[in-house]
Image 1 (cartoon, rainbow, N blue to C red):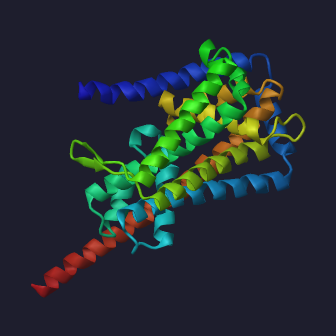
Image 2 (tube, rainbow, N blue to C red):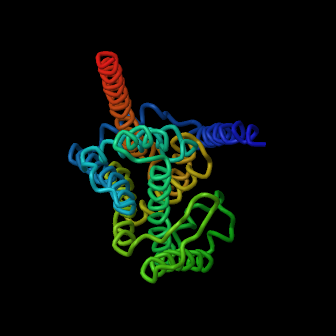
Length: 327
């Protein structure tokens, strides 16, 4: 059964990519896509490219904070901010591009943090808490959007079940999401009893850790959505709140689809949700997002991994030579 699942999830991701590209091809049928997208990219003012790049830095700074928060929860304080930031950046740059199947880069984190003295159990808790911090932010912002702007899901009519695009249902769902966040915060403050799941003991973080989570997670999502917001044209731009709502929906759809980087799925949801904007301009903004948030970080991360592994190899060779000399 486990072996079958190993093939099922990659196959599901590939099927989602192919289906999304087929639907995108239908959306752009009869249009000069390449010429229009290039023109849209050239029309983006330099200062908006700068703001999109700044939003990327905000997003990755928040992701580094995820790791720092998890380390504080574990009581680990001897690892420098620089090391944590580089490890977090590399982890997310790889996992965002490869897909959710790598479980937030657990292997990369283990290789890095084990060199600083953390054991496998500590790294597992760190990975779990970082993943939960992201989902907490998505639930928190998603709940706020659905409560205060429940009609935003109507933009996805045809892609979502009719029940979910109903305003009353959307608001009720938003209240449910916020109630989950409130329950988590209450459990942290009142120190609810820990849960034992197999070999893992799950404890509510201390209130100061929970507070940091509730700041860091929305900060990352706001930064990521900001890249697209600044890359879209000012004329016809529906506003940051709408872009944030669509971003949360499209990013979540990409994760659920298991498509690497949400490829195709992410674009399809955005184009469907912003019918008032030219499709080529939306696609251009999404290309800027993929360049700033995914591709450039991936290129840097690959260099970091190579340098780190080379350094580890040199250190290991030095230790072996020292042992031989001692003998």
